[in-house]
Image (cartoon, rainbow, N blue to C red; front, side):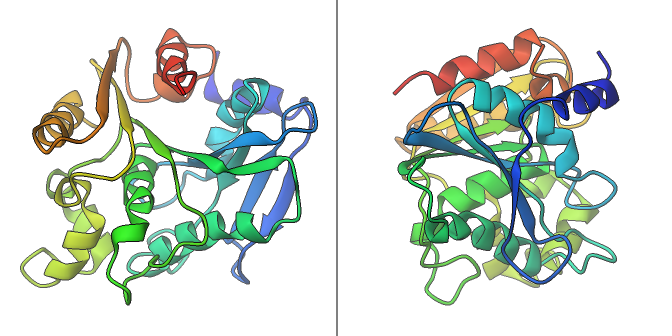
Length: 259
């Protein structure tokens, strides 16, 4: 089934509620709620697209519908990206942090903020790994002093080594490591090992966009540092992990059932 058809079919399900965390048109998130009163665990979902247009949170809607069916309140986050959105450093990171912290201000007893999983795909995986480490950021850093903290991360085909992300990563952070070392120290997942929460890295062995070796390298470094990390290698390519009908996603989602 094509991505467009999966998105179209997801519209037929229970519609989400939209919330704003800022004045910019991109500063929105959609909450997909499961049946029942809860409280339900929360999955904050961050889309990819190499931090730039044209991809938006729309591509993650089918996955959010699936997560809601699994009993999660799925929070589908949009954020400012490079280009006309005005994203980059620190705007993109400020947006992700603000969207997560917005949950603390929503008067909804169905949200169990003691059980928050960050689910990020591709560049969204990098943002999820960054957001999981917010409690350890310097006090003056973007995203520091979180109101909502994550308990674990599921990174799907993640860009978990910014050194290998090329010129787009340099544009995201406003310069190479030699010019803005503190930004790279805060944003690059490889420089933030070990994280204080469990991490699962799910990656297709035939990923044509982000090589599976990136997740292998992260997992090896994290294990070497004593971190709680799980590497899940699946069949298929880059987008299979955000297709809720795929065996790749079912395998990755199996990790979510572990408490």
